[in-house]
Amino acid sequence: MPGRVVGALVVVLVLVAAGAVVGLVLQDRYRVPEQDLFGGSPSPTPSPTPEPGADITGPLDLLLVGIDPRPDQPEWVPNADAVLVLHVNARLTRGYLFSLPRDLLVDVPAFEPSGFDGGRTKLTHAMSRGSQIPGQDLPDRAQGFALLAETVHEYTGIERFDAGAVLNFAGFTDLVEAVGGLDGFYVDQPVASQHRHPDGSHRTLRPGGGGYVGPQKVYEVGEQRLAGWEALDYARQRYIDGADYARQRHQRQLIQALVRELFAQDLVTDPAGLDRVVQTVGDALVFDGRGQRLIDFAFALRRLNADRIALVGLPGSSVINGGSYQGERLDPVADDFLAAVRDDRVAGFLADHPGLRDGQP
Image (cartoon, rainbow, N blue to C red):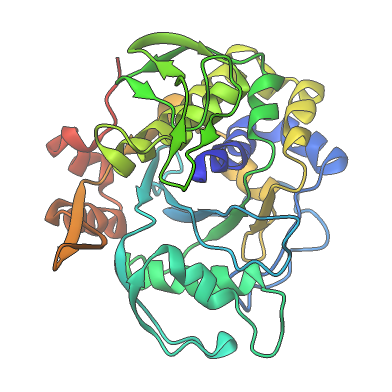
């Protein structure tokens, strides 16, 4: 499930928001793994410039992908369980975070490195189709990201992603626990967990399959305090009113809440404290800045904070053919929103379409 993508994505946003001083300290004490995700990215500059990130100019688009690795099955081919784009305006003062449904029906282009001939399928499968290496058992997630990025480019019309990250699900619970949980998190609809009992223990699979049995943990509407396991569990639930679109919204809200908590505790100005929090995710994040380091983006986007990152939900609906579920399609307003992203006029577009912004209590 894509719930734990929240943790690694928060690391990106936190490093972006942390600014110059924290960035320099973390550069020496904690290194995020870097890998060529797009194919053909230049190598990072070996020595720092006088001001890191000085040559990063807006607008920017960052592609963030969540996968669910299975450490005991190294041959498992990853799907893209969560796909998010962070658009930053030309002045690098405002960010807009939106999701694309994992089951979005898209045209995935042919991809010679994996031998994929191309075809129409769910967005999640672009990652798996691209990750396969003919004649080898082990997949290549960076290669899979490259095909996914090309697929998202063709669907959205976003010409170029300035940076990308592959995020796994490890570390989210520990990350929330590292900040002492999320106080005052607003649950915007009743959510009954498919996976957990009220005490946090795991529910039992129904004999013969088809769900789980036993009492359910319920998240009631209103301000709640979420422990790490609760935040992760809440982010996973899609059998609720709004289905996967509600789950996407809840994930974005959790990202924002965790960033707010980091600011509330002044961790973004406390190098030692932020270093401790960031290290909880370990190698959950692999980053490609197309020649720019993660620290360069942290400097360039240092004016962003939780209040400057708008959460955007794109509406859609299920595609049914002959009574069988095929996937998802976005409503026409999504095309207009994506055009606004391409033209860097998102602020004005959202002013005219306030319903696209995730609601605030």
